[in-house]
Amino acid sequence: MKLNIAVLPGDGIGPEIMTQALNVTKAVSDKFGHELTYKEAVVGACAIDATGNPYPEETHELCMNSDAVLFGAIGDPKYDNDPNAKVRPEQGLLNMRKKLGLYGNIRPVMTFPSLIHKSPLRSDLVEGADFVCIRELTGGMYFGRPQGRSEDGNTAYDTCVYTRDEIERVLHLAYKFAGQRRKKLTVVDKANVIATSRLWRQIAQEIAPQYPDIETDFLFVDNAAMRIIQWPKSFDVMVTENMFGDILTDEASVITGSMGLLPSASIGLHTSLFEPIHGSYPQAAGKDIANPLAMILSAALMFEYSFNLNEEGAMIREAVNASLEAGIVTEDIADGGKIYKLSEVGEWITEYIKNK
Image (cartoon, rainbow, N blue to C red; front, side, top):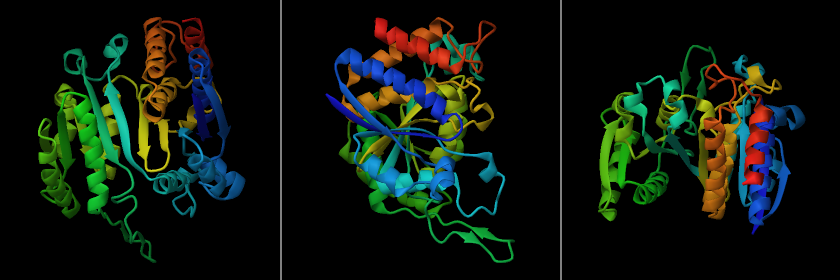
């Protein structure tokens, strides 16, 4: 099978983790006889430095002409620390989501048996937790207009906007995932306070009868935040709006023991994108110490979701689990044993696949 992918390493640790994910992707493609072609492009702070645009048109054209996008990370302290910057790396991410139609972010939350003790929760609470968060990506406060600050600098405002079409398409996506899992969907909103949330709940109640085999329940976002900590195993598939999803998925990620372990997929109208959920971690950039596993697991999702190659995705997951069980880990999840470099972990996983 021909696999044509766009590779966007991005900022911070992005290039380092992407190198290892690409090596794994090449190894899997060779083992299963696929023809892999890829081309790299800039996005984020490095794109601003090179072109003045955090998501250049050349990068967009590459993504549109590819079967899938592998993406590293966006962000740089020189922009984070300048509240008056007119152009920011994160604008590139938002533009990419909008222009590619990346409307649904899929974040699996799973535990790894060998790392249960690294979770901040008691093992009996988190062991066996396995759920999926689906976050709407192209609407809500991040894209609502008007948005800005007053001329005197004393007032700022954001606008939260959702349309029926935006809500319906991500709800149908969530029901599809729930149907493939344990057939339970939790819709998270703040319908007791926020008008857009009331529209979310209304539309979800209208759609639910179309999926009679799936149990649908509703939680206010504050209750959902507590439930993730108190009873994470109660969730199967969770769906919510953009900002709530941003916050809840980061909360959910840390119960597994490390944010560096979890991948994500952004399902698009044109091309889907696969990325780790962590940020650019600029403090570690160039030091060969970051955790590449989330980026490598994002490649597994790419094989499964964009190419329907489940055996290939399973091979990557097997290799990652083997590395964890063997203690081939970076400093964020090392537990008194040897600490391996980012590149050493990636090389071990690549060799595991080659020799399997």
